[in-house]
Amino acid sequence: MKKLLLATAIAALSVSAAQAAPTIYGKAFVTMDYVNVDDGNEDSDSVQINSNSSRIGFKGSEAMTANTDVIYQLEYGIDIDADDSRTFASRDTYLGFANKDFGQFRFGRNQSTTDYVNNVLVSDAYFDNLGNFMADSGRVDNSVVWLAPKYQGLPLQIAAMYAADESFVGEDEEENRDNGFGVSAMFDQGTGFTAGLAYDKDVNIAGDIIRGSATVDLGKYMAAPVTLGALYQVADYDNTSEDEKGLLVSAALGLSNFAKPASIYAQYNNTSDRGGVENADADQIVVGGRYFYKENMIAHAYVGANTIEEPGFDDRDEFAIGGGLEYLF
Image (tube, rainbow, N blue to C red; front, side):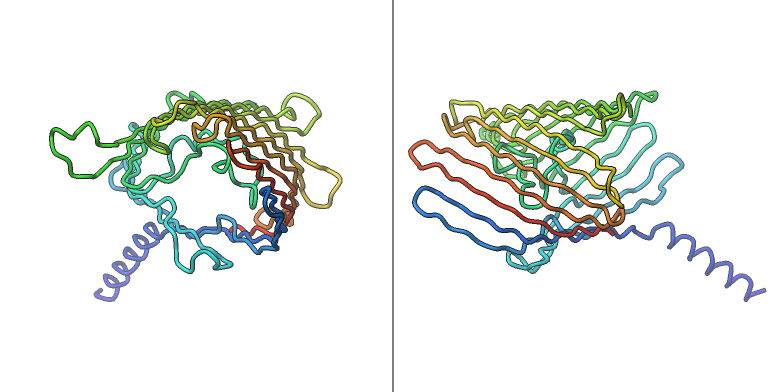
């Protein structure tokens, strides 16, 4: 009888441990890139081995009640070529809960909700650099994100963020506290058309960002495996006189004449008055392709060029060509 009770207890503990076990996931993405830069004073080049957003993460959930789960994620960036860092860099790391009626709450270091409207960027690796050309979303310390539950099947994902400024200030300095907030909404009913709108204040910049985007998968409507997208953004910096305006357009085409799934893409970025500085402009164009040996093994190749104009300085021209392998686990 004692042996039976002991076996039952061990089995119960094993089930509990299995339910609480985290999912381990990540990716390793390494490329070799040739880069040429001409800043008006010097024309220089370099051959580089680059790690591109490589990471490892742990995530999971466990029931608290019939309607509420504890949720968590610990995700860390890894610099595989180790030229920038030999330590883990915190990415999205949070502890929270998910309720069937009230949605998800994530407390910790979260990607800003502006990034939830990021369905147009198709380039990656060396050219995964929206932030080089316009104000971009980033991860925010001391933040909470709320993901609203879907309402009666409405194909709309709503999210909101609060970013706390934890500085100690007196009552007469309260207005100097830089708490931030953001909201976003993404519409996707699975018909090939998506649209998003996001706004944040004092989250990614000292100022306001408003972003809108739309994509259409023409393959859902005709015999053309092409996805088109456009994103437009305005950033109003507190300490500048001009608004930064950013435009991103992209096109991706699926290819059927290969043994494995493959696609090619083209992307154009344009930004005027970068950082709120009048006549500080930038342009970039990229073309590339992906070849899926397996769903989690992807070969990449790309070529692109950009020009950055700053008042009082010579134009900075950059050209890069490269390729590599991405492995997801």
